[in-house]
Image (cartoon, rainbow, N blue to C red; front, side, top):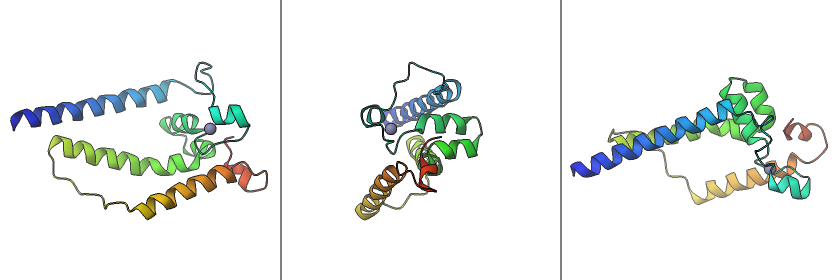
Length: 138
Ligand SMILES: [Zn+2]
């Protein structure tokens, strides 16, 4: 039993260290200047933005506190950050053995709705009509 707690604690520490490294990388590496970061394969092949285009630039701006600039690169990514951070925090609490509030189980229908919204977002950001073109990373 004690061995399980130690392993869970190590997993929690590894998760937190990994997140800290990811944050530092996002903070210090500017995707607009780092030429070694490959361009989006979908954009490179088709010339169209995918739903993920602008994600790194968005997170980089968000890490620097530039919320409005982050929103211009990838709106859904910024909107989803609190949910992702909250979910990770709950998982870490669980790993550390703290009793945490459980998120409600997300239904399959909700997953499909999110997937459809992401697809619609990916299409809409390529339509050159106001205000849809504002969804393109700029
Ligand atoms: Zn893309």
